[in-house]
Length: 294
Length: 288
Ligand SMILES: Nc1ncnc2c1ncn2[C@@H]1O[C@H](COP(=O)(O)OP(=O)(O)OP(=O)(O)O)[C@@H](O)[C@H]1O
Ligand SMILES: [Mg+2]
Image 1: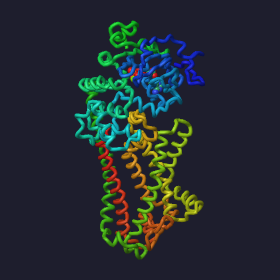
Image 2: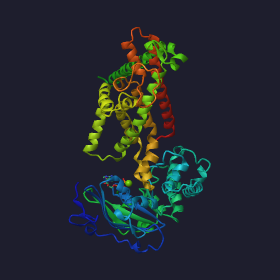
Image 3: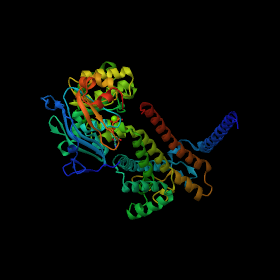
Image 4: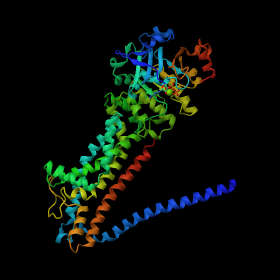
């Protein structure tokens, strides 16, 4: 399918002659004005994403409040991972991705030349679907981010490693074997190691793309407990296919939907998780959550 | 045919295939083993302290092969020092940076073709380019540069393939932590790919150590009383020594020539075995 997409001079997406965000009625997000001075809040306005000429997300307006868990839900292929990757500019690595609209982190634009992706990624960490520790020791995995930032002093690194492993609830299990190769850990432990690794750069936000979907129920439980602990200090944005999980761990839920392959996906509804799961405004949200499609 | 009959037929075909492929595989092993045993059987008699510590006498019919061994080591190590950095950098470019376009395809095609050029042609090219045009004369450096041209495609391909084995996940993890492309490559991707790169490179260099044609015109000599004393020195070499004995020394000493072959094969095998062992140790540590 070819959708006529152009990127205009200032980087905004133009679609069928007009700016993309103007062609869709934006979903109102009441939480937008509650930034305060806490660190780690995102605001998205009219965000659209195209892979080459294929527009896959259109006109997303959303506020991601600090120090809370925001869940992104929606059927497969509706652009959850794509939207998540906009928040730490990992889409840049794919090449041929065009992003329109504005995204700000704590009021500062993260788009284009306004933000160095390398700096952004130290502030916005990511945990992937499959545990992906580096082929090195547990210690070196966690110390990788700080070392990248130039931390060299042994004492400082030791402190960061311990603190991060504690943050990911892995410290007790590995404190005697920090030199052990990371691949000797179980899948669930590896995923918590990846969380620790992301924590070590002291990020304001951690993005998680289905972090527990490759894990057993007990490891999933541990990851969920970790997330609950973490949200007092970092903002968490999590993509999940598991409705119970979204309901259990998130404060806010955003539902995205791509109604047909010919149209891009958009944000259907965003709101407090409790309300989204008990009394959503949109009936498509309700049918998705109750499992009627997707 | 009944269903039972068909199953039985399939089972027979299966058995035949197993025996046939097994026999062929075993014969290959048998031939390799025979060559190896034959060299050891004929060459081991020459091995003593004199053989490896003295210079050849009476045009190689007597004495030892010390300058021959040293010459081969010298040329091969120089080749390694030239090939590894260039080959690894080129492989990194192809695997990590090269855009998918016409130029990249042309580069790959050129590398594939380079690997297919016969070694005598490299010898001729080395004579024209390094000995004459660049003015190195017949020397270790001219021979090593010629062998580098021949070995580069192997090292580049080994590097590129080893890098492609590294899961994309790992690169993403590093980038997402705020590492640059460059840091991701030298801290995560290259170390993880090192076993593959090193094993592949050693195989290429082992082949270079045993080649006669590329060094024939570019620096190998029949007889030298002293050891090579620098990169512009000429040199003796194991494969060329065997060739020269058999073709131009009437009454050549059978034991000493087989002994020379044994030293060459043993040297190459020892390095390959160490590389294979090291790789398997790394493999056990690193599973994707
Ligand atoms: N690298 C890419 N190049 C081109 N198209 C892509 C790329 N990644 C994703 N897409 C397309 O973008 C759309 C959204 O994909 P995305 O992976 O963001 O969906 P998702 O909601 O995360 O799906 P899932 O729940 O299956 O993970 C899909 O139509 C997909 O085919
Ligand atoms: Mg996804």
